[in-house]
Image 1: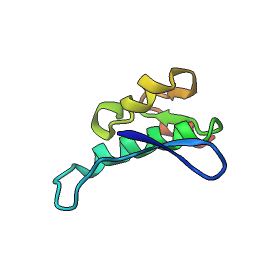
Image 2: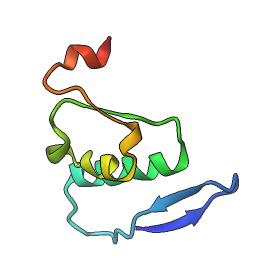
Image 3: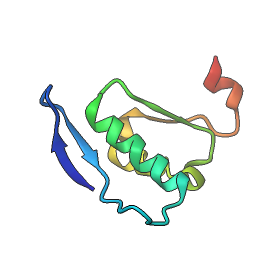
Length: 79
């Protein structure tokens, strides 16, 4: 992905997808989450041992200090 500046001078990642590209939805979700993380430092990610399926591991790689592994205890993610 490439970086593009917005009006408020924050940077966000913009995908290089081309119309017709076959991209798994979950991969686009992970990449979108990383783009959001670049634009807002308040965004954190909670995971219930699904990071490899949902591509949330991309967020963990980029922002390990804002990634929380809750393991298989989804009720802890809500509380």
